[in-house]
Image (cartoon, rainbow, N blue to C red; front, side, top):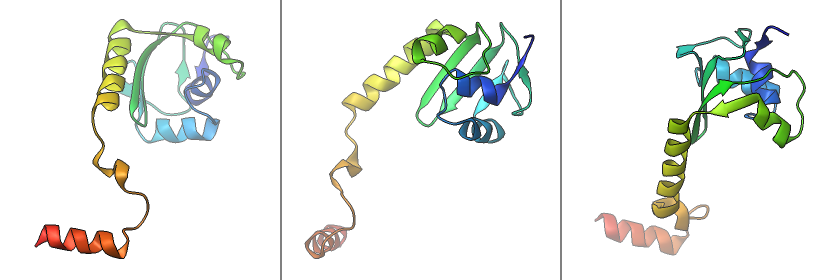
Length: 124
């Protein structure tokens, strides 16, 4: 196998849960192949560099293997090697999320009448 579609490889490497999600991410510009935006039908080859942005998480990986079948996670990890800078950035972002207070964490659903009155008093 000389090449494999980007969306199929992303799905097989377990970066996305479904192939359609992987295809949507590629067409949405969240995946870069060797530093350039790509299409879902573009072929990935061993040695290519992929920049992957999946919600809050970003990876920079080098393709080490090709597989068109989705297997268990330990086998999927053999398909790529994450760069050291990507690992450091991902761990730093994870630590920031852990230490940073999210203001909306206390809000669950719509405000009650009491909450609205508090917000009105605070705003005026």
